[in-house]
Length: 366
Image 1 (tube, rainbow, N blue to C red):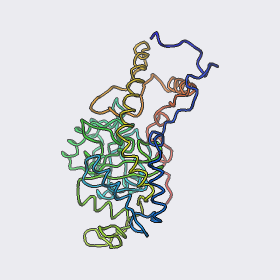
Image 2 (tube, helix red, strand yellow):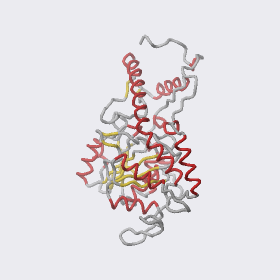
Image 3 (cartoon, rainbow, N blue to C red):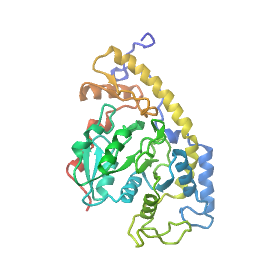
Image 4 (spheres, one colour):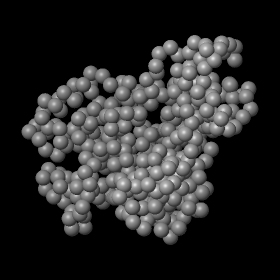
């Protein structure tokens, strides 16, 4: 620890270690001339809607094809947000009133919101030492109404998918992966989001690649793809190989929703996708450096320890997660780090998602 400089902390009146504001928005940080040119091209085409226009460039369709190829999925459906992608996945799987979906107790509220929007019931499972869904708790959550499991790959770290998939197969359940925070992450060498029946990603500002907002659902199943694409397009108003021809589910028209991605988002994301491998490599290097330094500190301070590492699951972790003995200590450490210019805080305020007041009290707009 000889390289550690003894000086007053910023919270105690010292000078911050980092003098400039860090850009924590990974995809946004690499926006450049490629994205600018792609957006301008769409604007000049006067065709911002994905299915038709005076000079349609089909940027969304191209991005869907490229993204599916990148992760090794057969199909992809672009969406207006990551939450919309989750709703598409749930609709494709037939999740609705009377169904239950097992979801981890620690996740972003959108995971639960999508389930509730489908008029299904979330059932909260424990998380393990990696802060991911604990497969050992699935049996406790199982009821005759269980329809699906939603493992959430939180912060770039993969869930133990072998155990989840084994349980799902045994009990005849479907699996919808929430990979919103883990675009590009791997589980035993395979991209997350491609292991279950459907996988959903987000392109909101804080994600690995971004168009400000956006999402995508991937699947290898032809029928699930068709159901999701139709649902995203108000029941198939424009979705077919030839724009403008209506489609059906099971031979009958259906009511869907409007969750379509627009051409500007598709253009930006097409450029961002090409930058993803280098972004992931840079994140991996930086995380290793920070983790090594924090481990040195943890070795000298009992009661502080790092999230256990699983190389086949957390190669592209987005953050360094540190466990402390209590919430007050966590608040103090986070405050000190922020004072030094390092983004830090408790995961979702240190509370499980079911403790969010709108979930705890079941507040909804009806």
